[in-house]
Length: 481
Ligand SMILES: Cc1cc2nc3c(=O)[nH]c(=O)nc-3n(C[C@H](O)[C@H](O)[C@H](O)COP(=O)(O)OP(=O)(O)OC[C@H]3O[C@@H](n4cnc5c(N)ncnc54)[C@H](O)[C@@H]3O)c2cc1C
Image (cartoon, rainbow, N blue to C red; front, top):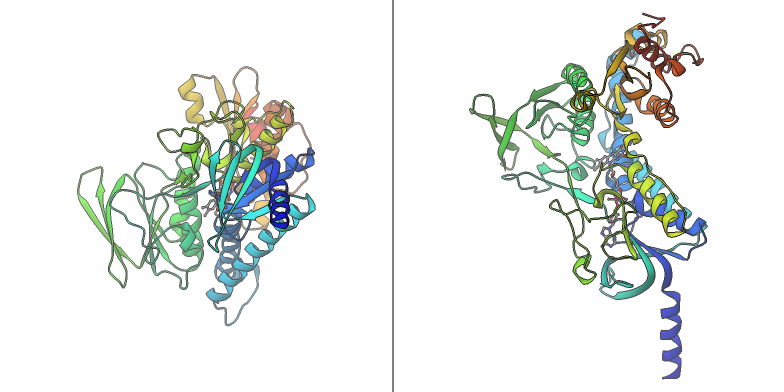
């Protein structure tokens, strides 16, 4: 009796934390690390065995692994010859491509496990559910449960793929991004519902590997949340890769026929029905905040009309010791947005006064050429009546781009008409995902277009295109076009 009591007591003490994070995606694990750095006793709970959340396991990292592999294949088949490289017997080992992706995911997930150990963060595996405001119960894979006590909680439970009415995901032929990352064959004809970032990225993986990709999109543009000029250019470039676009089409149903899929859509221009046949249908119409069986009802925390946990400006929920971050709250569903919020909440709990500049969270599409954007779009500025000027520089005019045969796309800089302050930078072109960091730094320090135009940029680099676009915005002074 006495022994059991002591054991139980020691378990209870072991499971009492200053902060417990629910979810180990980029929001959760970064929040946990920052809390630990600030001297707190931290636990993290993850329902899956692998740490890293959507981003590492079925999102950012595996998609980039396949994007890189497929880009190599595409270059080998289409560009090497012009470079004077002859490849004989070029072939595709798709099984190996998927296996390499899995290995990359594992390396990254193991890296998070290492970071948890290094920062002395206790990891629990299992599905967490609030019992009350200071306790969660963890349902484990083996059927047992464990309770964790904590002064504070950070909810970072992320999101799951959504669908549209009439389309039931069967994970066989009617699939989400998760299944598209572990296919066993390259589709001949991939029907892609949704022209957003995730769909276009995965579509371009398969287009490079030889699939015909048909995009069925409800609105009149792809990557519609970005500056419209980017979507138009990307659409033009993607057509050359084997994409067909059915814009302003409303999908009404998809059927798995066993051998393939039949999709029906309504053309919103003439209300006529369109039927498309393919072998797979990838549904990429966005994601919904994931709060299933989290026990929010036990702590009185409310969600908005889209199921996202409601938070105040300090990312605190209606329970004063519980915070929420990342995809499960409002805002862009991006890993680096979740990370910024993780740091913000950790520092807020520690009594600091952190800040997240949401305007300067860049958005990226990892197609080739890449697309990247930060700040206001031209449409935003028009809508708000902000006086602005625009400078554009095409990569075809860049010596570096010509050297690498990456001449498609441009940099567009929007600056305030009177003050010259940079208000937005929109890039479609080689290495745009990395180039955008310069724009973020410039805008964070409230640089003018002329400031950047007067700074030395190494020659020849893709980054010179930003300098020239800034000069173009500054009294049309671009030097290299
Ligand atoms: C195909 C794809 C590609 C993407 N590419 C990019 C990209 O290139 N760049 C980018 O910035 N973003 C990208 N994203 C988006 C990015 O993955 C998300 O924005 C990011 O993962 C959100 O982080 P998070 O920490 O909020 O949640 P998540 O990463 O979703 O992590 C939440 C974690 O919480 C766990 N969990 C949920 N409920 C519970 C519970 N009750 N108990 C215990 N654990 C729980 C989940 O299992 C999950 O591991 C991509 C997404 C997809 C699907």
